[in-house]
Amino acid sequence: MTRWAAFLRGVNVGGHGKLPMKDLRARMDEAGFSDVATYIQSGNVVFDRAGEPASVEKKLSILIEDHFGLRPPMRLMTLAALIDAEAQNPYPNPAELKHVHLWFLASAPATPDLEALQALKIPGEVFVLQTDIFYLHAPEGIGQSKLADKVERHLGVSGTARNLRTVRAMLELAGRKS
Image: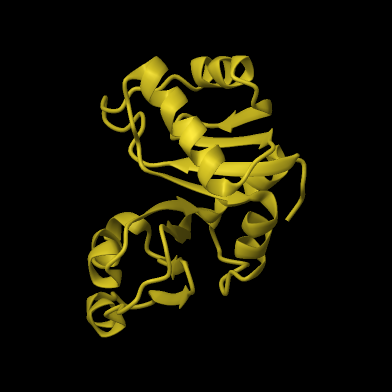
């Protein structure tokens, strides 16, 4: 049995992509996912399930589509991979956890345009791309960042972002401390 973390993109945002986490947990339990837990309403789920990543992701995607009429993009990773992503974070002790964001990318970018992202930085911002995770420290807040909205375009790959507070909360929810 593998412990998984799923990050769903675009659910419960601005009245769109409505996916009640309580209902999702119940449906997942019924479908054989075990020890299911969610963090806030933005599509952060941890659970246990045997199987290969593609199979587990497909089962969860079909479940969400069948029961909720949605097919949100998702980044599924093992708990071990999430622990590693947090451990590799080059900005582990920011003044505020919400100022560090991790983009969990669908794959490693083949031809990322990091120079374009460099040109968009505001003073104090720093970022690092490590394989399929993009780390951004935006000490003025993500809302002030000019590059946050352009990360995927300039990396050439889709993904979903979570702040460090959420990542650490997911690790705790999964039963592992970071």
